[in-house]
Length: 386
Image (tube, rainbow, N blue to C red; front, side):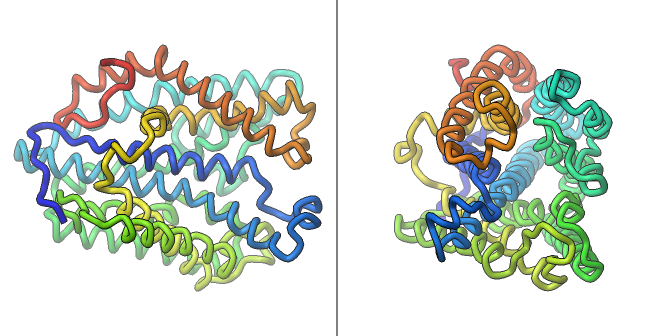
């Protein structure tokens, strides 16, 4: 381990932007490639098809990586603020979060409402968007399933916002030892929920969209911050590759071996498989994050760091990009599983990057500049702002 970095009032690690982009890319692959049986893939891959589906399914843990990274950074920045100033400004924290998340989030919800009432849209999804507007999208999705609308990935923002309700207060008033207990309670709550949901053979949507279940990843991120104690891992290249391989193996086995992801309540693998699957998801996320911490930015393509900086927009717009191309070029949503799904995926990714880049430059940047005025510990720079 390298000694703690104490650049007064500043904490920025470009490699974490790469991790953000990687997390988005995993989610994008999961949303654009088939992860259930498709006869074309079955006939092409034969006996290897289950490995393909499990690999695409494992990419869903990209969202777990987002959660883990978010909790790691929140804990790291707030602890540095407390160590530097002797206190944590809760009001400033919430102002920063609001300026970063709310403008783009509510713009996306407005776009979702427009889509809902356009020809071919689903007006009934407006009810779900209402739940999303008060950051209850995760619970709405757990109870009623996702709204049929391209804003549906934003359910995860609800989980983050619920985490922000108590996380800064906990870090403000708890010492480091107490924070370990807090993380233990989060993990316990997640696993008790998984045990119950496995016992009653709950539908998969009731599990994945459950905020309490997802809090395990936030606990993992906080634990990593506490264990590192401001230090940066100093690892050899082969050690980093080994950690990445183990992380992917955790995710893959959760899908291929434990079947934590399923589609019918009758396929619910049971309490212990769910507990193991989600634990492997969190563990893989922590290992992947740890593997990249301390990597020299010179080893990472600059464009990946830029895309990491605009990753919130990439995440927000990617389903809308897929929806637009499906309607305009491919005729019908069923085309997602057509023989041209790879071509469609590439086009969707390109459109997503274009939309996110424009949004970041012309819509998000003014809010980010306001956010920086409320920063105690300066973190991520604004791309293109010099």
